[in-house]
Image 1: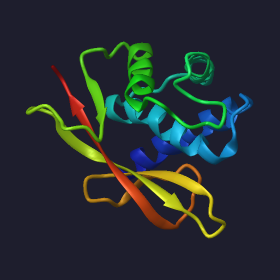
Image 2 (image 1 turned 90 degrees about the vertical axis):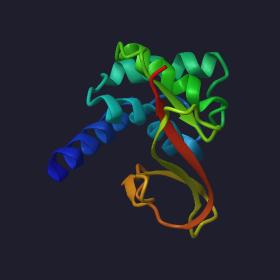
Image 3 (image 1 turned 180 degrees about the vertical axis):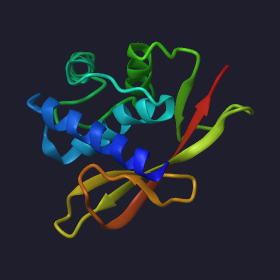
Length: 151
């Protein structure tokens, strides 16, 4: 199972290497990668590099992703990925007070590296890294819980 998960994460990472010609400030691409990867990890289904590019372009046009790469609405971005995956029966919630039947699935940690750049990593419920797209370590600035909910 661990080998499959690692392969899956490497596969997701390779999609973003292909998809990154989109103009986004490099400081926040790891946040975009994590939010787009979450629905894929939770459903066990990948989307194509072209689908990722289209989601990011549309999200930039709709100001969900700002020119500096900052995400203004993580839930909306994750929902757009879920729609492509045809998995509209689940909702991914970020840091809000979850509904009663929501399940905690992990955390998004905001880190500051040694060069004072901000990075994001996805952890499990035990706060151990699951996906670290920029492969960095640093001091934790904030933590946001991630929940899955099926209304």
